[in-house]
Length: 501
Ligand code: URP
Ligand code: ZN
Ligand code: ZN
Ligand code: ZN
Image (tube, rainbow, N blue to C red; front, side, top):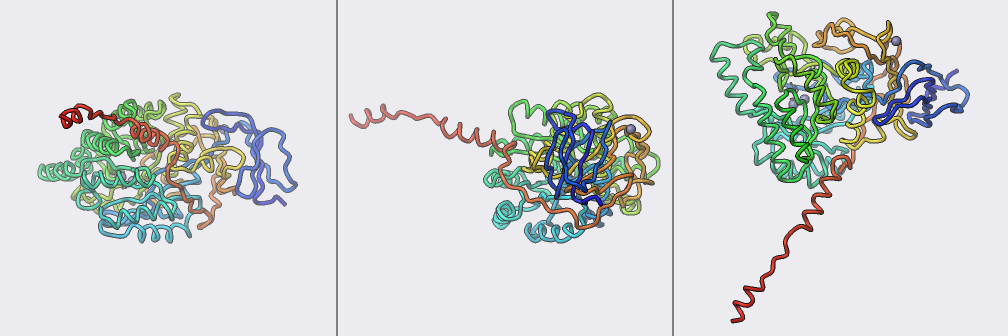
């Protein structure tokens, strides 16, 4: 009988971020033991034929909100259905956000997330923590989270006025502290004051439908906040990660800051790369509301292609989904007022195929860049590399056998009828994808094959992360050092002469 934890993947092409090679991969006890040709394997090893296919590092989704309590309801995909869907789509790790209410303990919220997620996840996961208010206790708790709880990333909101939003001076303190403790600051970059004013204006004009959601927060509202966050972070030499970059304007701000040497990283998401905001004008209210998320998808239909170009060129760095799903009847909470439509869309299952389709199948990026933006860069940014995001001896055996061709087996049409998520619609409905996961292996176990998920709840692990990821902090530290030596040694001799007289 085949030994469950021993797998040899034979005949495929191993794809890492810098190169691809014909090689077999031998996995035992959850770890990649060898990569090469003619590998000797113990009796009882299960052999998986990967001829004609690629072997990729499992995808890392940098941005999810499983079962998040938000806007008066709770996201329908929980840590079980969400991670089940993830592995069905070739993703083997998610990074979810702990979001404490204003005034609440970050540590208590973190423990709550852990208690919920640990027993449900089907693949590995880690946690970012949101800072939604500011005082000395928050500061101390951030330190504890970094030193004892495996957190190295904190999200601050410039939007959601009176709910999660921080003021500029609070952002300044939070970014400064992130820098002191070796964490990366993440921002939801939209101007919350302008959104609040814009929303009032739309409602007063009688615009109550989903299109009002975009109209009250046009691109410049996102671009302004993106620029402001970059300026504040730079003033304290803190690395910055802009989550869900949704518009051309905001993406240009990130790209230009990178060219000016700022340590900033932009994360487009599957929704923004795969679809657009014209759906808000759909006559069917439920259809339109299904796309409501913040920042909104943009009505300019050339936006997804533009974001993909920037992702291909390293102006943008990494991809997530912001998976935060509400069913059609939950969305209906806002049927008379778009400000009450729960914000969020799906993506965790479809991200890999959507990015392959719009990025690789379209000719904008090669298979190696695909790996960089779907796993390796995320692993580097959040200090998981090379445990995750790489196929090499000693790395975790999180792998996907990927069908890259447009033949009968290797394409799929995305549909809510066949997806594994709990949500009852799919924003990518009908999209044909010419790159699909055929087999997903999480921690050395096959969790998805022949179209079926075989993962059990609680089999994933929490992956702790250390601070000061080199990929992020090397330049920051170099600058500190150079600056420390750059102060001018002034000469006071003239004064001395004057006093001597
Ligand atoms: O619409 C969104 N993005 N919902 C989730 C919360 C957030 O802002 O990321
Ligand atoms: Zn956000
Ligand atoms: Zn989010
Ligand atoms: Zn095929």
